[in-house]
Image (cartoon, rainbow, N blue to C red; front, side, top):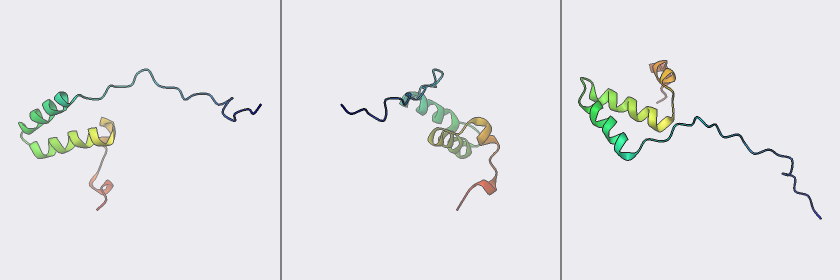
Length: 70
C-alpha cells in the first residue's frame, strides 16, 4: 500500500476575519458618490486602485509618483 507524501502536510489556515467582496451594487454606489466630488477622476481612480489591487488604505496613502512605473 502506497502512502501519500501529503499525509503529514497540514491544510492552510483560513483567516476568519476576511472581508467579503463588494457587491456590484455597492461598487456602483461608491463610484457614483466619487463622481459627485470636487475631484471625480482622482477619486474614481483611487477607488478602482484599491479594489483592483487589494491595497490597504495606508499603502495607498504612502504611494508617491516615483512608485508608479511607465
